[in-house]
Length: 148
Image 1 (tube, rainbow, N blue to C red):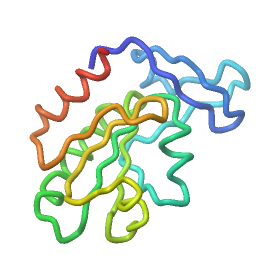
Image 2 (tube, helix red, strand yellow):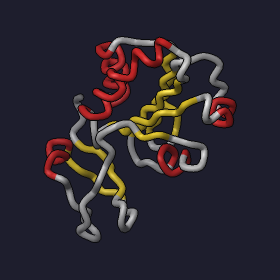
Image 3 (cartoon, one colour):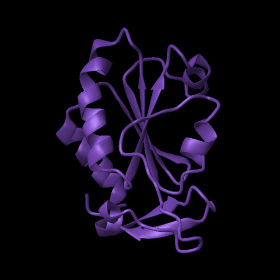
Image 4 (cartoon, rainbow, N blue to C red):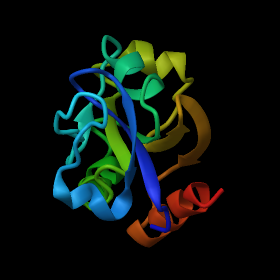
């Protein structure tokens, strides 16, 4: 994805650090405390208890995947979501919200059907995408927001 740098929050001192994307594989260190800046390389299970911390307080992009276990389209998208989380680690944090286990979050965001993808930027909703989509379409959709 065409983005030169990202903001990542240090887990130790909570300082937001601007990190060049080319340096993400090198395990970047915090400019304030020197600690290694860790970021998820796989999807994060998001619950109501940790929603604000994982999504609203994140200084960059977060892609939320609202899903349900009974949904065949959701299950079909899991490999795409897992690939995206690994390939875009540090650039886009990927979160999973199981609407059956987290009905309060589903209600909070008026989720009436799954799958639904919601992209956040700096704690605010940037866009939503309803229904199952292919990996190329999902990547193009995210790239269109990263370039904005």
